[in-house]
Image (tube, rainbow, N blue to C red; front, side, top):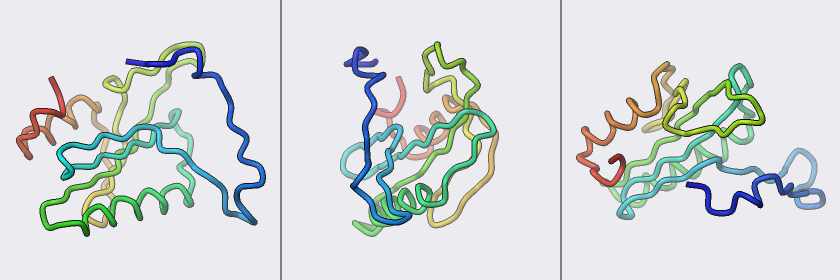
Length: 130
């Protein structure tokens, strides 16, 4: 489900936006449901380390979401792949290697599809998966 395939290779130049060590970051994928659930995804090639600044930014977004109400749920899902650069990375085929939930990190090795089905079942969140 890529809407603008011709734009995928377009680069963004962030020069002049941040000062010192501060620089813009991106979020690889976001799913939000019913103003209650927020799932942030960070996707990396296998064995590539996550940057501390990015992890902190994602944590702050997730933590702020949880403060909205007692029913708010947020999670950061860190995934890896080993797909060659000339091939499409399909999210459902990724491997979850780490997730952040309720203020702490948990190491895991699980297919993303299975991980999301567990979340879907636990929260009865039928919009999450088909």
